[in-house]
Image (cartoon, rainbow, N blue to C red; front, side, top):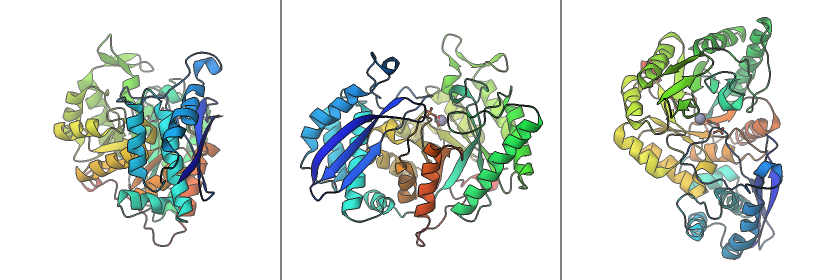
Length: 429
Ligand code: PGA
Ligand code: ZN
């Protein structure tokens, strides 16, 4: 049972304040969790509470921390940490608003995740096994999609598209997948250096070369894969996160491809992306269109959805109702899963279950602002989600998650997902 809850303000990988929560149980177990934070956020995400004034240009989280140490601590003390669903419901009811805006989703998520860790530890169960039990799923090791080239809001808009990622398709194990990703990341840096281009780090540890078009970036991805001694389309396939919501110009009613110096409407965006999938080994595209363009998403899915993964991030914001709307409309065929978009662990597990039931692939994902907390690795493994998106294979906020996967992989009972998260690929590429 929860004996004490204590939150503090710590700092994320961008040097911004974030919430960390300690949950202490009566039998002396400490569960600790830190909350991540996005930059290219969807409008329907659970509410991240910032102080708005004062230190850190108003980005402080002292108010949210105060809510944990006051109202939330009083409400959850004495609660059984093993009753995760009941605890999360209590937190949601206590907040009382749709997007957890009263107490702050960052306050609530911190408590939810810390309680889960405390429960696992008090049961002497590895976290991923406890998550599997809560979710009623078979655990397994996910295939990573690894950030290689970054643009958009993660790299000063140096490229229009936010992420170009490598998926080590032919890897037979998690270890091999990480090894291949590290080779591609290094080869990409060499390829850029050979062209006299910058190899600056972006927010998720990827490279920020500031390339002008998606095509040039994809050519560079292919070159990097080949330089790494691997075959594009066979050993490594490419995933893209367009993050189109951050390109959307509401006044124009079109997408602003600033680096290309042009605007594109919905049809032109779909054409551009279809063209990429014809000429390059692209297996997955996330947020190809704006978060409110449901009709466009349906058209896109009719066009490409039987060949590649079309992942909704800002579109679904890890929200069960938005996902259900997408399923009804035939929008996308996969969902990005971010714990802080949802606000509780139980709500997040719910979204993964709903995705599975609808035949949508889940991709457990980090945020661009991260901490050393590696909860998502246990979440992905515990739910057997099949895919994880952590960022690049650089910087300790990202490596903490890969390293946790390496530890989890020591369990001989766990299989590696391989490309099972890409069920449509056999027909494509
Ligand atoms: P964010 O980026 O954390 O800045 O939202 C990650 C993503 O768009 O997938
Ligand atoms: Zn995204």
